[in-house]
Image (cartoon, rainbow over all chains, first blue to last red; front, side):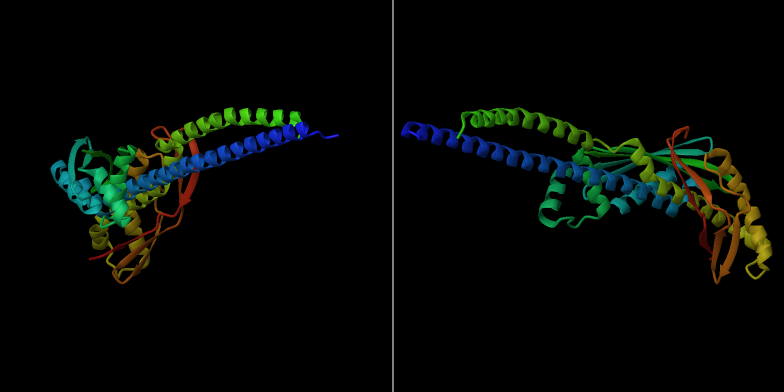
Length: 180
Length: 156
C-alpha cells in the first residue's frame, strides 16, 4: 500500500532524477558546442596552411617560369631587382616591404626574399570584417593571414634552371614573411 | 521511483562530470597539434605537382635558349626529321647536366617535334619517373609519379 509519506518520497526521487538527467543533457550540449567550435577552427587553420603552402609554391613556380632565364644569367644585383619587383606585383600587399639578397655559389644561386607586412592584424581584420577578401588579392590576403596565424613564416624552395652552354644551376629561394 | 535508480543516475552524473573535461582536454590538445604547420610528408606531396612543373620549365627554358642555334642548323621549313634531330641534339646537353645533379632522370633524345605556325610543340616520347621522396637524400620514398614533359615554345 502506498502511504502519503512514501508518495512524497517517490516524488522527491523522481524530481532529483529528472534534474540529474537535465544537467547531464545540458553538459553534453555545451560540450558539443565547445568541441565543434574548436574542430572547425582547427579545420579552417589547416585549410589556410595548405592554401598558404600552395601559394608559396605557385609564387616560386610562376617566378621561374616568367624569369627563369634572367635569374640564371643575370648577376646577383639584377636578380634581387627581379625578385623584389616580381614579389611587389605578385603579392600586392598594402603597406608591404620587399627586400631580396642573393649570392652565387659556383654556378648555383641562393636568394632570400624578405616580405615585411606593416599593420597586418588590423588590415586583415578590416578586410575580413567588412569585405571578405576585400580589395586585396588572394596572395596578399594569404600572406597577411600567415603572419597573423604565426605559421609558415619561412619557406625554402629550389629548382634547376638551364644556363647557356648546357649547364644546370640550382636556384634556391628562401622567403620569409614578417609582420611589424 | 526506486532509490537504486536515483543512485545510479547520480553515479552517471559524476562520471559525466569527470569524463567531459577529460575528453575536452584530449580534443583540444589534438586540435592544438593541427594548428602547427602541416607535416613534412604532406608538404612534399603538395609540392610534387610543382616539382613536376619545375622540371618541364627547365626543359622549356633550355629549348628557348637553344632555339636560335637549332633554327640556324635546321630552319622551320626543313624536313621534320632534320629539325627533330637538331632539336634533340641541342637539348641533350641540358638533360645530361640536369641528370648529373638531380635524383630525377630525364630521358635523352626524347622529343618528337611538331611545328604549327610559330609554335613548336615538343612532344615527349617517354615519360619521366619522379620519386616523391624526402629531400635531400630522397631515401624515404612516399611514392612515384610519372609525367610527360611535353611543352610548347614560340619562335619570335
